[in-house]
Image 1 (cartoon, chains in turn cyan, blue):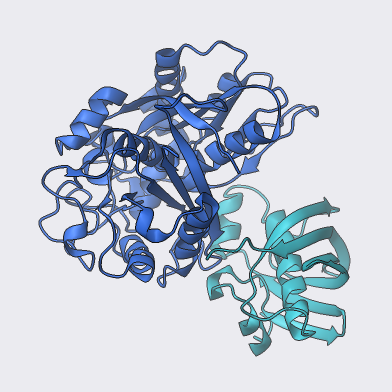
Image 2 (image 1 turned 90 degrees about the vertical axis):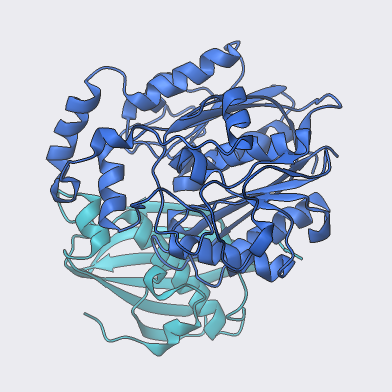
Length: 144
Length: 366
């Protein structure tokens, strides 16, 4: 398992909803994060109870999206209290990530327009790309 | 945004059809459904293969109970075939969606669609895994489609769930089932009671004066835990405030609240925290139907919407059953007998589901 990184506490997500365990590297506009998966994780064990231990693709997408949010916070483009919703998401799943594994997400911010943030990233497992993901996050609707 | 109106309501619950259900709720009747079917089974120890076998043994290999419920409620409204159908369900009966939607056409959507179904390329599939808020997610999809397109004029929204072994096993393993029957908001609450049923509403873009309409919609996600709610209630509070903002109303204008009110210690605590944060200790009357008919899972949200519509239409908020005491919200939980509210006034209904998704919808006569 990866060593835990305190920077992930900047995410607004509850601990059980976080898909990042460690920030492996961070540069302005770029971030690399890690998330480890074991066969015993409930989400893995229950997803395909009698099949291969595939990490569900939605978790890969979530890791990339959370990485983009964390990057925006670390770069000062958003505060940790800002709430975003995914306005668009495109995922290309190249090959399965099989637990046990560590998923490395490499994520970049691509554009910022009227508060919306574009991002794209790739997920790697065992050195191979397993998914390419693009998305746009927009500020959550205002609730007075 | 001008949302459509609710033109018709149909339902099947453990109390009966929709008129019988509504009068039963007003009379504080409580009828648990066929949970006894599964009583005595060592469901905690079942594995997936055994569940499949048991489902076949209990329900046969023909139409499953959810599909039968769906058919019965559709028969009540006799759809014309041109009206698009939106379906929300938690249920694992693959044939439910396949049979109801057949060859999907553009405009149709499915909330909580079975993984094994691959819609045709021409379809704009809506895959919203919204758990116990699935019915309201289907409603929101239908409402937005009606607002954003010139045709059709009307849409049907169906939410349905039937008792299943896998569902019962899951909630049993999670320790979420009540031993005594659900007592929403009670100090002595010990969990939920699984119910089953179907709810259908017909939306109309051109309502008549007597129709209750959707006034505002709010959604949020806890992003907290796969199954537990955020105990602060803040994300639910956000959905409620968003719905009121969308409706152009402040909290003082809400005449009643149809709560998600499952009767689980954590769920009611989070919901209570959200209501107190908005209304303080003087919220409008709060009611939950889950003490009467159980938790209809994927159909629970749409049932709450139907109840909210009737409250606004009739000016009567039904009581929450089986409560001798209630935590925090005090007398504002409706108990014993129904409570009068202004006819036509805005009423808000809530639904929360696994994954932390929250929906709040305000209905009333604008």
